[in-house]
Image (cartoon, rainbow, N blue to C red; front, side, top):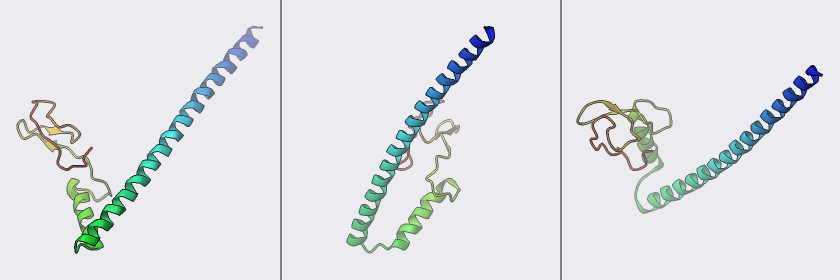
Length: 118
C-alpha cells in the first residue's frame, strides 16, 4: 500500500511537470512566431527604405555594405550585430551599459550613441 501511494504521487508529479513543460513550450513557440513576424516586417521595411534611398540618391549597394561594416565594427567585433559594448561615463569614467541613458553611479546623462540602440 505504501508503495502504491508513492507510485501514485510520483505519477502525479511527473504529470504536473509534463503539463508545465508543455505550457512553456507553447509559450516559447508563440514568442518565436512573434519574433519571426517582427523580423520579417523589419526586413521588408529596411528593403523598402533602401530602395527609396537608392532611387533618390546616387548611393550604391557597395556604399550600403561599407556602412553596415563600419557600424558593425564600432564595438570592435565584426559579428553582424550593432553590439552593446560598454562606454565610459564622461564624468566618473566608469564603464556603463549602452542600454541606459544615465550613469548608474553618478547620474550623468550619457545618452545613446545611435538612434536604434537598445
